[in-house]
Image (tube, rainbow, N blue to C red; front, side, top):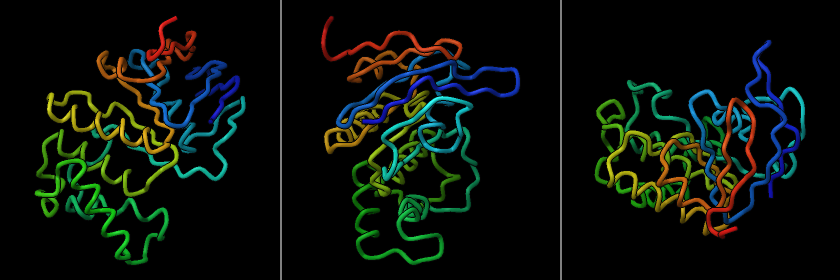
Length: 215
């Protein structure tokens, strides 16, 4: 379990997170919901270790492998990479930037491509993909990392029903294998699928609700 206590993040005079306390359990999908600017992405960045909090504590992340899937809109659309090359980058965390992929890594890439339904476009350039295909490729890269903590920022926003179903199924499978999964989302149906929902408003956290068990 990962526990954050009294987490505060400030950007100058602006408060992005205000004394947020929450816990995230393994084998559980937690949905972060709230309007743009509510602090969802900031909380993901803190959990991923990308951003240091101004104050507060995070417990349980030591030794955890973290896989972070950003919004596809913040990833350059003209990346000079094939889908297979992008997905293979998920092994860099284990192998280092300049080491060749092992046979085990290549098998992991093949499995991830198949799970996301993009094996048939593995040699296509990322710049030639639709939004849904790009999002699947980014998630496939995270699967190769095989993170203990899987963080996803708006993974299904703007996608068609088929792409959303594929991505949501993989998210559920990752939680079932034991990962802690945290998903920032605007999609009510995606939030309803989660085992826990945390609502952020202007950086403050409302009382968490368990969507799997009625009160």
